[in-house]
Length: 182
Image 1 (cartoon, one colour):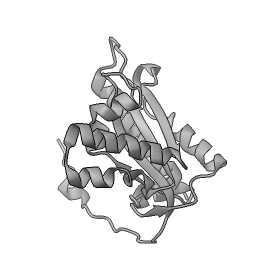
Image 2: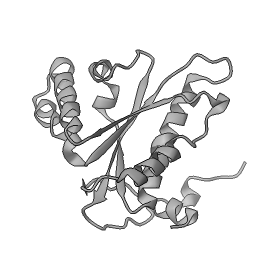
Image 3: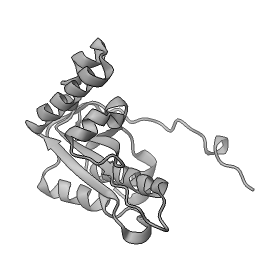
């Protein structure tokens, strides 16, 4: 797949199954994450991979977070199952570092770019992925359970696996609706 095709056909694949990326595919995905824009070369990221039984551990973290913070029965009942929607999840974290030239927003954006780069690397290798956020990306209880610092941000959970359906999505937006000239 060439770069233009990748950029113009990339999509989120929310229905994923095994197999997860193999060792060689994962190495490419990891390298893609580390090639994103990084003002000041400070590498403001951390990644945690959950696969196999570790997905159940992540589900337990979600569950405990929902019980203590949300107390919403619907979320509590689903929490343990959420990480089982794909054979691999990569948790992407912005590790903010005080820096005179690199503001917090740029560091968070860099970590966000890493998620897109990993998803594109997976897609280019015939895998699928979906970037998820929501409550569990903002939860203080989840951050604590993952041993993150107060100033760290979970920018997303990248679910990766093999797409279960081949549903190519057409372009939803027209450039003329979003681009203008100064």
